[in-house]
Amino acid sequence: MNILIVLFCIIVLVLLITWAKINAFLALLLTSILTGLLLGIPLSGITQSVQKGIGDTLGSLVVIISLGAMLGKLVAESGAAQQIATMMMNLFGEKYIQWALMATGFIIGIPLFYNVGFVLMVPLIFSVVYQYKLPAVYIGLPMLASLSVTHGFLPPHPSPVALVAQLHANMGVTLMYGILLAVPAVIIAGPLFSSSLKNIKALPLKAFEAKHLEASELPGASNSFFTALLPVVLLIITSLFSSLINQKTLLHTIILIISDPSIVMLIALIFATFSFGIFQNKSMKEVMNIYGDAIKDVAMILLIIGGSGALKQVLIDSGVSNQIATVLQSMQIHPLILAWLIAAIIRVCIGSATIAGLTTAGIIAPMMPMLHVHPSLMVLSIGAGSLMFSHVNDPGFWMFKEYFNLTMKETIRSWSLMETIVSTVGLIGVMILNFFI
Image (tube, rainbow, N blue to C red; front, side, top):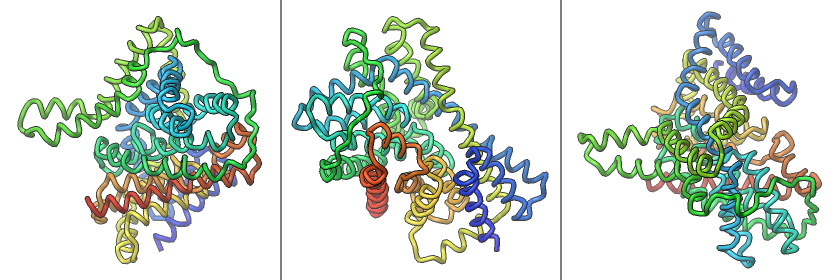
């Protein structure tokens, strides 16, 4: 009976967001309270569960996500993203222009939030389209596939970071496995898939033109690459060193401190403050204003993450998670596939990859000790499922449609199928990794 209650409450959550158009944070709060009441938790206990869930979830994430937003905003405002894009185009040349855009999207997509990366990169796609007289969707989809994959698979993006925290995975290990999965996913969903879309006659709207900086205003190429990728470099290096160095030494303790995602992001941001800010003739006040704007961009994301934590805590405190675990253990389906399927269904119903991932994590997290799967693979499986078949309830669907001036049919044929391929390839990759780990 309790399992049916949980399913009913998830349906209520979906309807509150999609049909009633209620803000996702408020919908998660209302659903958490309703779930607690129906599962028999006393009213005073429900409020304690909600407060504990929000506090525990945000406590480990606010710093990482906020610092990540600041870094991404500075990468965009300083012209570093434009510099990276220019260098990649020069490196690959006209013949491999799709691959250049795909690689650029992947590099820039790591520090930038998806919406920022999308708005920043679309003008570059259009400039290539006009310069080389090539189909816009054919040229642009590989880059946008890269942005989507980094958003769903790789820290320091909000959903992967939150999943790592909730499922007690290692950030560096998850990042390394995520990159292994991301490369084939973006190649198949990008250059290979987009070759079938050359006949889509898109006419990009010229109204969508971003501010273009002169070459003299841009930071250096090596500086742009190094600073933008510094969080990734630090996470990978510290994860490798911590496993190689004797755990009883002082050096190992220092590396553990540095490898904490919050410290990694703080080090990267301090470095970027000077490399992209002060040394580029920006005043400290200008840089801090950029950081202030970045926080505004992620405030609602943080609230949604907190709301998902409330729902997770209610499920834990009610004891229903143990019942769900018992049912799942009796089902003839692998836990990684099941988690992917739950996330995919919620994604199709709600449209938000972040909410799909966090809601699934709330269901799966309490059962992790009984599922006997690698936590980093569970993070990636849920992340892959959360990207499944973007359609009319996803803001990204409409951004792509309007920026590229496409019909609904063309958008589904290109964008929606690209997201489906990314999700499916991600699951296949997770299962292959699971065979060897």
